[in-house]
Length: 103
Image (cartoon, rainbow, N blue to C red):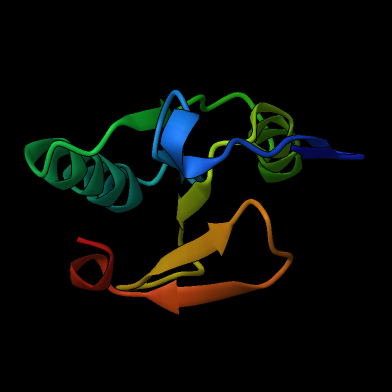
């Protein structure tokens, strides 16, 4: 249950279901969007690890996410627009989805 980047938690025993990462958080509209996504996930009783650290780079946040190994990583940033970047920890590919597709 690991690779060279860190842990890969199986869904059944993962401490959180989703690792939500906010990028470009100095932009008020992005910050508002990521907090809205966080609230929607909590409202649906999803266990979320929320990375809202403003002082960290995207690369540092992604490396930390891989090291921690939560099954699903969601990223909200300027680049994702109205969508959210979705990535399974066990895979290398990412895709852009709407929040309603996740919930």
